[in-house]
Structures are given as C-alpha cells and as structure tokens.
Length: 291
Length: 162
Image (cartoon, rainbow over all chains, first blue to last red; front, side):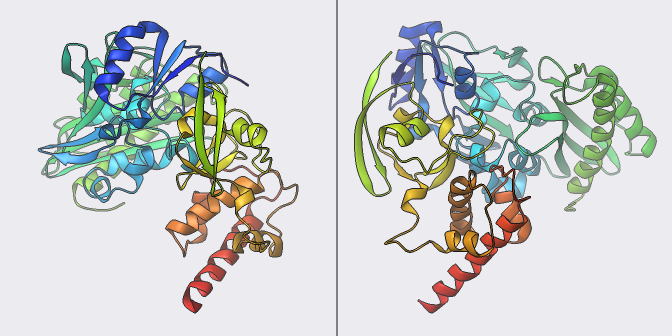
C-alpha cells in the first residue's frame, strides 16, 4: 500500500519547523516517529499534502529531570523510556507503559510526543499522562504555552493544539514520597491495542489514599480519567470494599464500544478488575515494595 | 509531490538515489537497490518481516520513508554473512531448525542480532520479548529461541577466545 504523494520537509531547527508549519498550514502534518501516521497514510486514512519531519531536530530528543519534573522531548523514543534508569527508579508506571506499547521494533521509532499528539484513545500514554497529571509544552508562532493534560484531548484524534503549534515536550511532575503508580493492560497479543488498560497514580497518607488519579485506555471515545473511581478511593483506606466500589465506579463511568476485542459488558468488567489490581500494585510500590 | 536525492549507507556501501518522498524504505531496499532478502509480509506494521537495522536499531522498514533514512546506515540480511561465512545466528537457525518457510527469517535475524548486541546472555524470556515484534507462522517460536540461544553461546565463546 502506497501513500498518496506529499511534499517532504526536514527542518533542522524548531524555528524552521514552525515557520514551515505557519506557511503550509492545515495541509501539513508533523512527522515524528511515524508509527501511527505512516500506517494511516498507507491506508489513505490520512493524505497530508506535506510532511514536516522533526527527525532532524536533535534538541527535541531529551529525557531528563529538570526541577521537579521529568521532561520528555517530543522526539524521545519509547525505547528510551524502557532503558532509562531514571524512569525505572522514579516513574515505574511510565516504564510499565513503555514495555507494552506496540512491539520492540515499533518502540525504536515511536515517540511519546506522537503517542499523545495523535490523541487516539486506544494509545497508552494518554491514560498514563492523565494519571500523572502531566503537562505538555507546545510552541507556536507567538511562543510557548503549557497545556494541562486534562485540557489536551478534545475529541477522537483531536487535541487543543492550535493551528501552527507543535508539541515540543511533556512534563511529568515527580511523584512525592509515599507515591506509587501502575499501568496494567490487557491485550490480545503483542502489538495490539489494549482491550482495556488502567493507569493509577496515588499518594498515601499512612493507610489512607490521600490523592489518586486514574486514566483509562481504549474504553471511551476521548482519553479520559475515571473521576468517580478516584472519588471512591480518595480519603479511604484500601479495603476490599473500597477497591470494589472504585472498580465498579470506573466500569460504570467508562464508555467502551463493542468491537472485535470484546463486548461492552466484558470491557466494563475488565476495567473493574484492572482498577482494583492497579490500585493494589500502586499501593505496594508507594510502600516501597516491588510487585 | 517532491523528489529527493538521498544517500544511505547500506551494508557498508554508500548508495545515492533520487526517490519520491512517499517511497517506503522497504521499497527502496527491494526495488531501487534490488536487495530482496528484506521481505514485505503484512503491509500493516504488524509482522516484522521487513525488519532492517537503521543506525543500529531494528525497525520495520515498511513504516519508515526512504527520505527519513537519508544519511543513515542501514543493514539488511544480505550484509550478515561476511566472506561467505554464516553469522553465528544464521548458523544457529540452520543447526536448530529455526526456520521452516523462511519468510520471517531475515527479520528475525536482524532483531536477534540487535538483541544479542545489547544483551549477550539473554534468558529465554528476554529472547521471546526481544523478538516479539517479529511474527512466525510456522515454527511456534521454540526452534527460533533455541537458535538464538545457540548463537548467544557461540558469540560469547568467540568473545572469550578472542
């Protein structure tokens, strides 16, 4: 399958990329790892008239802690997360996700930034970043601005990026002491999208869950948090009854559609189970354990 | 539509060609360079039959545009046996019957070589994880895992002997 013809641009600086995007407008798409965009172009689901390849802008490939944030450049590959000692030490939920995104070959090209900017509710990073309460930094013709992750996803494959803006980095706030997180995904086989997946990041105060954020993968048309489940857990001890209530709340508030991966009831029940499991793993990690 | 002159170092040789921007790397390798050991399997970024090494990392060449590889180094299966002598991985696939129809084998070998370069002593689980982007519909994978273990043992032995 051959994509429709397009003009290819390979800027070497972000300013050059922004100028090109300003000139070409909506007819152009940004190419980062290309592991979603190129298949979409091959199926002719996307037929941009021009591609602006970020691949030759090395300044976008960073992955480092700055202040109280983990900063992930738009060109950082999924594989970079997998092998990062920093991610392994302080961001175990991110490592959980990096290991189950697509397959190792795809992860050598695919980027975290692209995974978010594509805004596919079946992608894994949206739920993870929703649970972390991350922010994305975008650059446009009039400078940089920061978008809270809760405000990023506006529709299926749609974000709040304005025309002419490029996602340049993701910032994850460093988890506080007594925090833990987990990303649990059920997939039919390696490389498939999730049937359902759940990201949980929480902070304990003694035996009580002081703060928690939960993101869900592939069970709603727009990447979304499970806010009713969060409410069911916040301020509570992690008893079986509390976890069951949270799992049921998430199952109830998600909005999956039936497809070849399963029926609606099955997916809802999977969410119920995964929320309970992920909360347990997150608590174990918050207590310093390694499940 | 734009055409671009690109230079790619393929199996150690610099190749310069004029390509359409939409040309996929796998088509560049197979059709422009006539290196047909890299296979096209699923055409949907699923199977890994088209795996090549791009600047040292195995990737699906059906999901990279040739223009993205301008200036890069690409290694394909044709470059694996040096001087007519099989690479230990190729020898392992021979000895342990790591292939039946052979269609996935070039991609498997490229992935396996990258795995062993990073992890010379992989566990069975690490091998299975490492080749999980490459689908085989014949072997059930057991013989492929044994073949990679064979090569890992042999490469470690060679390294000790050197």
